[in-house]
Length: 275
Ligand SMILES: Nc1ncnc2c1ncn2[C@@H]1O[C@H](COP(=O)(O)OP(=O)(O)OP(=O)(O)O)[C@@H](O)[C@H]1O
Ligand SMILES: [Mg+2]
Image (cartoon, rainbow, N blue to C red; front, side, top):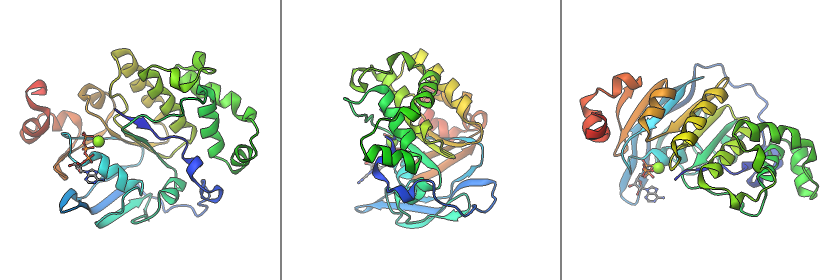
């Protein structure tokens, strides 16, 4: 299961929201890790990973359960501190930075487990995420005023994920695929430069999967997307480049058509179903 980031502004201080005014150095590489490692109580979940995500790409991260994909996301977003190695976002060294600072550079993510506020309406979720993007919006929240000023934009986002008809319903009443779509709308409301998606189509039916693929195609313009995805047809449709992780180590890397034929990848991950 995947959960999208709830409006991270809820957890941020006002000053941390998109206030990084220095222009980042120009770079073709949006996210880079150098010999990045994370140890958990005696074992290494991410082991000397050199990842290079090209600006504007959809970059898929695949690999068997326990390969370290979510841990890598947790490192990239500052949830975990690296044990060793370096992380750069848009050419800035963010190794050891807080999640707030990294989010402030325009990085938004989804989580692997769904988490929404069951009693807030669908529209309120997106309005809250939009409010989190601006300091003014945050004050509205603090003062308990409504998000009327975000209503149109929220409706537009809900339209794009196919949820506009559910706007007034409590998030808790949505079926699974629609909860995921709402989480996507919340992440998009942040207008991130870098979007990290942890299994965006997990648990979805065929129709929801193709809607999500289409939506990712639409929103990728002007963004860099890193996506953990087990569904290989989604990877084939979307990914410019694929990195295969196994036991914390990069096993192979390249375009999908190349890695799908790599015997090491077939043995370690794709197995007989995809061979
Ligand atoms: N906070 C933690 N403390 C200890 N071990 C952890 C922690 N988080 C992850 N691990 C371990 O690190 C390894 C990598 O886990 P991770 O969740 O990154 O894998 P994954 O590739 O996302 O797998 P999946 O496809 O099942 O989501 C696993 O062995 C997991 O048990
Ligand atoms: Mg995971």
